[in-house]
Image (cartoon, rainbow, N blue to C red; front, side, top):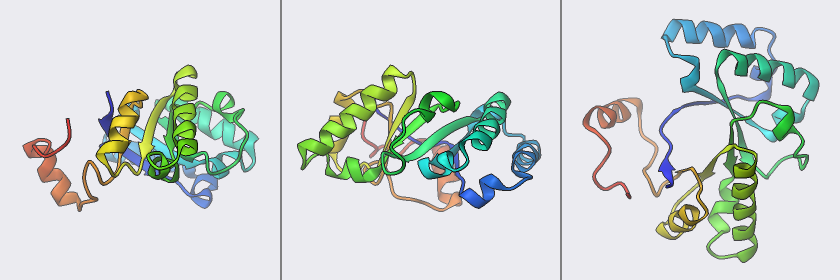
Length: 177
């Protein structure tokens, strides 16, 4: 069943990820907030992952050893090498919204989305569809057994106070089931 995404995910840019004190900053942030590492997911694009793959691998393995989950954001739009899916301790693939947006109007895009979901499942990776905007996309992703979806179909971005209120009162009754 396709679920909506509401998690503590952080997107990292190359300069932040390459900083010498990156891992120390992550550890300090976890200590300061009291957040258990298993609840933190760091999102990196394929291009960030593939720049200096050797040093990237060592950083990712340290993060994974801490219990932090790692996601590849905008999957399918960057480097074409798939070897990093086994080389790095990746937990999640996030299908780029450009594929999801076109999947209902183009059989080619629907095939790409299906192939990514099947590949991720075969590799025992979690898969999230980004940019879900319509009920038709939602139904197709459910049929493909996509794990989660995010996008305007489920809700618009909101300020922290509104999210806190929503979490305290429960999920909106208008949310799709």
